[in-house]
Image 1 (tube, rainbow, N blue to C red):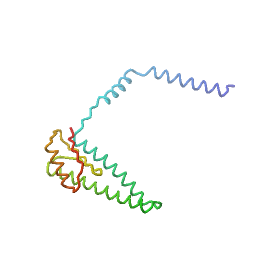
Image 2: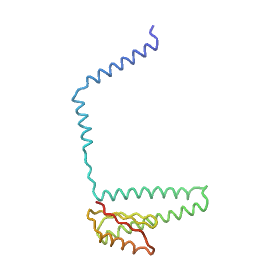
Image 3: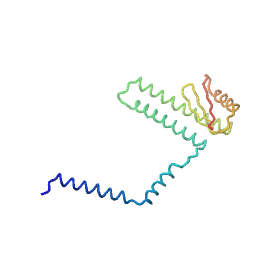
Image 4: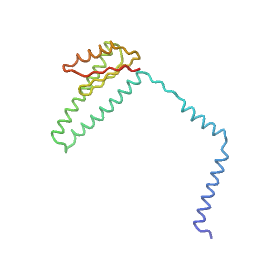
Length: 164
């Protein structure tokens, strides 16, 4: 009789032998096709347009804001949250909505006045603006800063970056 250990050894040895023979007998043609496919994937060049960068910035900003909104809403809906926590969450939610509206207002003003696509992000007293233009024009940047500052009574730290 053959015991179990010998049966397993013969089975595994046969499997290894069959896989070894299969690997050795693979055609060079199949290997070259697989290698060519890998080379084609590596050589792809991606061209990025200015508007693509703005869209990426918009998506990233929206995701951040959405995560914060969900966090604040969960605090508001949590039965174990204190009144102070709920008030703070509500105020932060209001600030987030107001900053989002201000960002859209700034983008629309820049589009109207200068006919440029822009991305705006507001963090407390800092306003970051990215303009989709290869041309770096300090006069336009200064005019945008003045235009945005006129929207607010208090002083803001405003940066304008031209996307090259």
